Amino acid sequence: MAGFGSFDTSSDALLAACSLILSKPNATARHIKDPELALRTSTEYCAWLYYTPDHKYELSMLTDQAEPGAALTGKKSCRIPAFVDDQRYPPGSLKYVFALHNHPFGGPLSYFDMRKIIDLAKTHEWVVDTKEGRIPLAVIAFFSNTTDPENPTCDGFYQYTPETRTLDQWANTQEGWRRRKMGTVTWLSDRTYRVDPE
Image 1: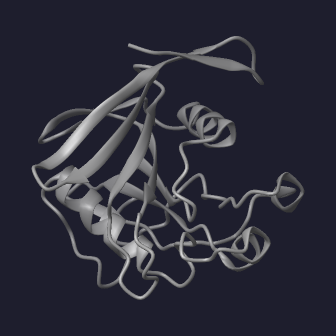
Image 2 (image 1 turned 135 degrees about the vertical axis):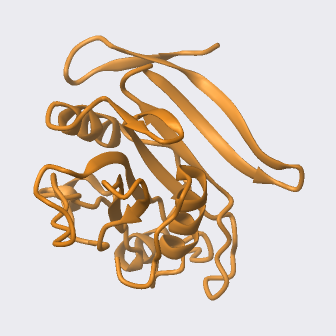
């Protein structure tokens, strides 16, 4: 994505992506008290954070295209493309690390979020080798606790990693980033799951 820059570490790229995505119009909706208005006016954005042959992390273009049938669920969604077209690199040379999006209301990952990354894991590597080490493919949903839409803060994100089946919440605290393991996801069928707490 033009203007995003290349990053040497996945954590630096992730934090920059969080701030960028949450700064987009209507990416947060906690300040809107009317639930119907909040749902109508909020927007979910999504993008890929990927690893290049230059050993850098890049962000794809953002999209706000909704998943088909999303309006019927009463929730926001964003349709992330399966592949990134970065003309600087040969086809097939990019490694997909994180499927990113925002949750305007700050809630946890949904069934649809987790199923989508499992579907994408059928196309991409479950674990990517980088100069930092091995990084598992994951879906991430950023959230902001702010009630000031003009100055949204990156307050944290939810993360589901199919390879380890872990569901985590990361919070940006005064002491730094803190991880809370919410549990391990067990799929009972394609449509049902349970989260076993630690």
